[in-house]
View 1 (cartoon, helix red, strand yellow):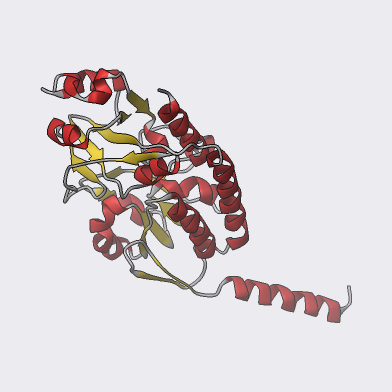
View 2 (cartoon, rainbow, N blue to C red):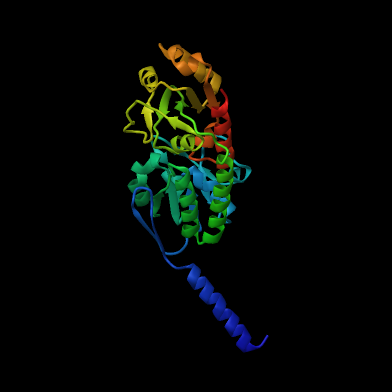
Length: 297
């Protein structure tokens, strides 16, 4: 190879590397401006929806939360760190990872300042609350990591698959009351959540007469009174533990058996990984499962 050709190739490589290392600036779901010196390559994805898209676009996160629900095979290979609702992520474990970006869900938004001070890494709150949000945030992940083309391809394929799926969805007025069963407590989903949006996509309406919890955004504390006031046609239970046990617990609440959905045997159990980790992996599969469940009369 002549020296001139080699020099030209080297210059091209240097220019390409320089372009890929340009600073990144974006806004997270709280409207905070996040600035990175270069595309992120060492991400701790503690908002679990981000794990599989990052893997698929070729920039697997170096860490995820130690969630207890079902994972994709690829996600199982990602290093897990401790994350708790009430305490946030384990700061010592995070600090040992040499991250250049940490992504957390809205549940842990209150820990952002603490994490940034302790770890010295920018923290972004990313947690889609609708299907359109999901598509936008997959594309945002592509921008953040310098994999915009791959991210756009993932989002476009997902959009096309859901558009095709929903083309046959009949118009419906099915009223749905959705519960998340945590150990020892139940919470009701609010309409302005990812599950609420997906229910509307498949022809239902998420109803909840309760008031949003000040501690857990997107949920209200469960009470039979609020469920009765919501008067649902269908009750969806997404359980963090054995569903049979939680159904037995619900049956012991005074007034539970008076609910129209209970009397009509329209209590549906769905998997936690499909909806609580908004939106979990395989969102198209989850939406199809919900569509089929609500279609059964």
